[in-house]
Image (tube, rainbow, N blue to C red; front, side, top):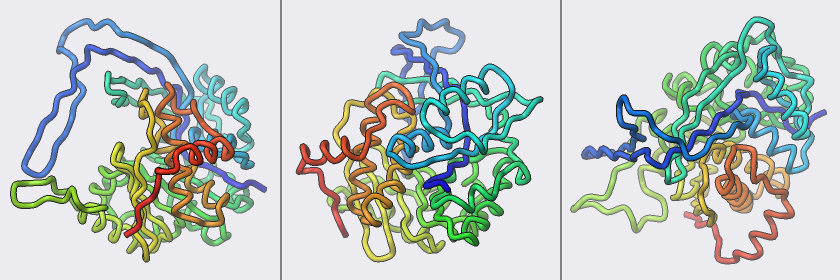
Length: 347
C-alpha cells in the first residue's frame, strides 16, 4: 500500500549557464513574451555546467518521499547509461521502483536546460522512452493500492494512457492530482474534461491555463487598471472555467506573483515565499506535489497547504537542480513561524 504513486517523465538534465545570454522582450497590445537569445553562429563560453536527474514524475516522487510518505513511481527508461543513473538516484531518494518500466531497445529521456542570469530557463528536451508509455505497461494494481495518484506531464504517445489511468483511479477511490503540461493541453479543455473531472486537484501555470481556457490576462492600460485587485479578473475567469470540469480544487501558478486557487466557494491568493532564485526548474513539481502532501498533513486545509507548498517551492528555486532543496514538514513549519507576515489572501 502506497501513500502516493506518481506517473510522468524521468530524465537526465544537463544544466548550462551562460551569463552572456540576452533576454529579449516582445510586446503586443494584449501580451508580452520573453526570449532567451544567443548571437547566431557565435561560439559562447559557459559559466557553469552540471547534470542531475529530473522529470516531473521523478521530481514529485522524490519530494513526496522526503516529506515522509511511502511513494512509488511509474516511469519508463531504457537499458542505457541514463536509465541506470536514473534508477540509482531514485532508489537513493527513498522511492519504490517496483513499478518502473524498462525498455530494451529505446533510449531514456535527456534534457539540456539553458539558464539565464535571471535564474529562469529554457529546456531542450529529448523525450525518449518518456513518450512511449503504453497502457498495458502500467501496473494498475499499484494504482489501486495507493491513496493518491500524482499525474505529471506526459507527452507523445504516452498521453494515451491518461484517460484509462484517471478513470481507473476514480473507480478505485484513489485521489488524483494532475499537472497536465502544455504539450497535452494544446488539445484543448474539451479533450481533458473527462480526466480533469476525476481529479481532486488540478494544477497549471498561468500560460497553460490561458492555453486551455482560451482566456488572456489583460495588462494594465491607460483606461483600465487591474493592479489593485487581489486576483486579476481574468485569472478568476480561468479558475472558474477550470473548476467547471468538476475538480475539487484548481490551482494556477504565476511565478513571482504567487499562486491562485479556487474550491468553488473561496478564491485564494498565496504570495511567493521570499527566496533568492537560482533556478526555477522543478518549482512547479515541488509546489503541486507538496500541496497534495500538505492536504493529507493538514486534513484538507487549503489555505495552510498553499503556504506549505509555497515554502517548499521557494526552497527548491533557491538551489541548483529540481530535486535539491526539498524540506520536511518540520522545516517548513519553522520557516512559517519565522515569517509571520506571510499570509494567504481570501476573496
